[in-house]
Every structure is written in C-alpha cells, then in structure tokens.
Length: 553
Image 1 (spheres, helix red, strand yellow):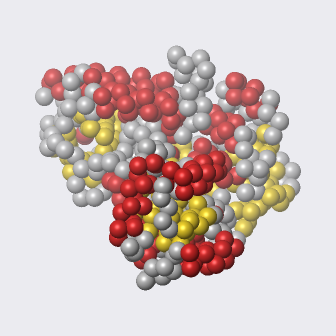
Image 2 (spheres, helix red, strand yellow):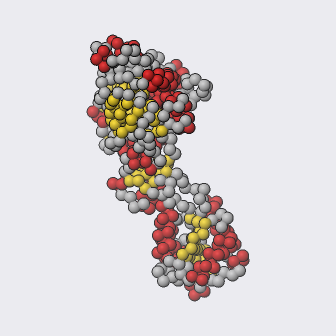
Image 3 (cartoon, helix red, strand yellow):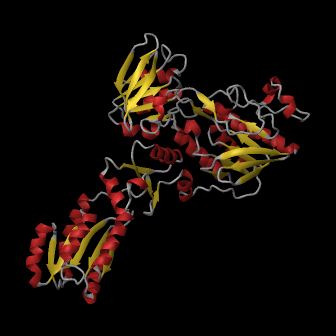
C-alpha cells in the first residue's frame, strides 16, 4: 500500500528546509513528505496526486507567500482533499488571520514560527492531527476503475471484457457515484469521453475499444512466432483443454479468442456437476485455473483478437485476423462455441446493453440490487443466472414457454429454485414488448395459452434461449449441418459435398472436419453434448488426433 503524504509549503527556502527535515525525521516511517516553495506548484502537485489516487494526510502551509496567502492555498487544496488535516504557519502579526481561517477554511491548527524545539511545539500537535486522520482514513481503491453510465452498451461491453478476463476493477456509475464525479472532474473528462478506464497508474483511457484496453492490460494481439503446430480458435472449455494438452505434449500452440477465455461456461456463477468439485466452482474459477495451466506449458494466448477467415494451403493453414495480421499453423482446432439466440422482438433491440442482456448475469447483477428482474429460458444457464441474480434482486421471474422446468433443467437447480423465496417460475409466458425511455422500465408479458397480456415493472431482462454456433465467419468449405454446427468424423459421409472436399485415402478422424488438419470440438461441433465436462474431453481428445495428423504430414 502506498504511504500517505504530508505536503509542506513555504516560500522561504531555509525555513522550508528546516520544516522538511523535521517532518522527515519524525514521520518518514509512515508518511511520504513532499515540500515546495511555490503555491501554484503545490496545487499542480495536489491535482496530480488526486489523479494518481494518492492519500494526502496533512497540509502544512506558510501564511505569507508571494503567489497567494496560505489561507487561500488551503481553501483550494481542501477542494481536492477535503479530509486532509491542515496547519497554518504564521508570524505573531498573522494570528488574527489564522483564527479567522479556523472558521473560513476549517483550519485544524495554526502554529507560530519558529517551532523550536519541534519535540515540544511541533510534533505533539501533528501527532494528534495525524492520529485523528488515521482513525477516519479509508484507503481508496488502488486498482483499475471503470467510470461510465450503467445503461450504456459500450460500458457493458467493457465490464463484460474485464470480468471475463478476471481483471479486478471498481465500477463507478457517473449518475449515482460521488467518487465517479470526482474522477471525472480530476481527469477533466466530459460526457463524450465516457466510458473511461482509469488504470492503476492514474492514466486514463477514454472510450477505449476492447483491443486498446487489452493491449494496455498486457494482452498481446500479435503472434510472436511465424508458424505453430496447433492454432486453437476459441478459448471455451474445449479450447482451454486442448491448449493445456497441446502445450504439455510439446506442440507449439497458440490460443486465439475475440473476447475472453471461458466462453459461456466462464460466465456461469456456479457449476455444481463438474467432476472433482463436490462444492461446485464458478466458471470464472475454472477458467482461471485452465488459463494458468495452459500458459505454464508455454501456450501463447492472443486476446482480444478476432479471426475473420481461415484458408488451407496444403500442409499449412493461414489464419486471417481482424487487425490485418496473420497466423500460420500446421493444424487448427475450431472451438468457437455458441452464442445465445436473440429474441425476435424489435422492441428489445434498443435496450440491449441498457437493461436487456444476453447472458451477463454475473457481470450486471449488482446493478439491479433490490429491483425486479426477469430471466428468459429454461436451461441450466438460465437457472444458474436466476440463482445468482436472486442474491441481489428483489424478485427474479423465470419466463418459460413450457409448463415447467423438468424437461430442460437439471434437478439440482430446480430444487434450488423451488427453495429460493424470491424466485418465481412463470410457465407459458413470453415477452411481447419492452418499454422504457433510455433504459428498460417495463415488460409486456403474454400468456401463450390464454393470450392475456400483463404490463409489469422490469429493470433487467436476462436472455438464455437456445444457442447458435459461431461459424458464420468461416468461408472455407467446411461442411455444417442445417443449423450451422460443424460436422466431423464419420458423419461427413452423409453429405454430398464430402467426396468433393475430402481427397485423402483415410477417413476423417473422429473430430476432424472435411478439411484435413482442421478439427472441431465443444459446442460448435454437430452432435456435441453441451456440457462442460464433455467439451473438456473433446478438447483433450482433439490433441491426440492432431498428433496423428502431424505425423502423417
């Protein structure tokens, strides 16, 4: 933790030297002492200290200075650090001004010069003031801070990115947080600059893109090598497992993801049916452990970086990136996973990121403390989200089209939901319309059996309905089923295009696509089990087929 600061100012250089000497002699173990002869320089220093999130414990200022009187300096300094203790150094002729300052600028104490011996005239006074300051001092947050508007899609994207990549940060809503308004003022920000990220060193990123933020946080958007044995596209459970096994088995491996590791599983508040964790674990914790394992084995992680296309050039695969870069690899694993379907309802689009969210329950839950929220969907992801939201929301309503959850959700989650008093399940119900000005305020719900509609207050709507594979970007002639999932292995023979694309004497390996050396694993693959454990298994299994393929070539 940074040491709190004592700032001393006196335009008389010999006096300032004596003051600095005495302060450092007594307080250097617990405080950092800064001294200057210029009031203007001192104010600039205080502004910079505020921007860097430093703590100011004590201001000691001379009264008669050519640039401004000490009382005026302390009045301006108080605006930046209202909790700091203040001491005015005066001559006998200035005592009346010092007494007035006690009321005018809430001066804590005045001392007449000289203060010798300091052990009798200076230190006892300052000791008492510093002790009082310490009693009320609460260290400010020293990490990264995100300042913006709660119901802003760009703010939501930044929160989602930071949470997904497990970066600790403090979220400050400029409309409700006094601290946010202070940061905006200190850093000279305007509404057009928001959202802004204040980094730990005090530097500010105004309306950063995910790539800009990722680069400042140490992520590498550029590949370090010219050729890799295995390139994994998508860092969900399947991709992470493949990275761990590929790296541990000696393959030069690169893992590429456009957002953050973990995929949909990484946003899960609690996974309770994963082998070896009887008390369950969060998706974020599972992701953290996996990415730590992978990087320990030398796997290179590129993020946030989006792949726009892949091309097979004989034994080599060329991967084109959104920033114009390229990665060459001898084999590829597609593990891009799936995304939630969007509700086909035009009224929801204007509130996406402003009250309507696809997933993101763990990111946005605390924004809806003591407010009613709704969850659409009857699968495990919807159930886990409802349980997490129930910790903060006044009421969580789960909207489903079926009669109950028994056919779509694991029994352990159904039992938890039934035992949570502020969760209710609304069967045969769908969203007909979303209402509000700049943010979601109400929903119009329709009962699919009776046709009856009801208008209800709603601050948040979290959607977990169905999934679609993230394969639209693939231009290469890779066979997909009618829903867009990638076909692999023996299932490929059922397609007419198979014989036109597969020209090897052998059949495709179990997880191999119709393009030799390009594999698929996890939820993006046709016929996948849609479970974290099965995705991890497929990712590990894919690496064994990669070894076989590389041995052939």
